[in-house]
Length: 225
Image (cartoon, rainbow, N blue to C red; front, side, top):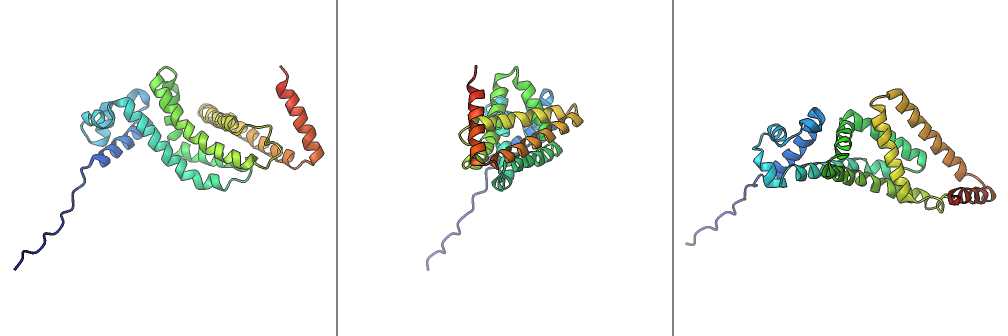
């Protein structure tokens, strides 16, 4: 009588991925609650409930952890709003989406984290690159929307979507930070952006002759020294 075949044993997870995720989540939570000045290997490890040596084991130090935390968190946030971006049908829709995202991000404390990273990045090249790389994920998403919106627009040969996407992103970042010290002024600025979106819609509804005249005037204005 042959021996029964042994049942396959299920390997237990090593916990490596779980530890990495806990450290990443704790990094963002620590930035929200303590600011960049209070964010260290010790405070992050304490929040994650692990030995701080694991930061160097998994990320080769704080720079690597901050870079991965910013990248992973931004990817999650961009993915969360991707369906909303897909429904945008005009520049005004894009601005409205931006306002809604701004409200949600501020409520979650992400605007405060961004402010901390932007301030620290002015004097820390590593943090500066980390922040720029994270912001570029938003820029790429906005660029995709603008490219789609402008494809059949009379403004298509006057506007460069990559450059405009950076301008839109920079405008919202500036307004987000400005609103933190002057909520009323920030709100007025957002209203002005909405009016700009309405103006673009008016331009797109112009007849062929008016469109050509407008394009000609814009070209002359942008090529003059």
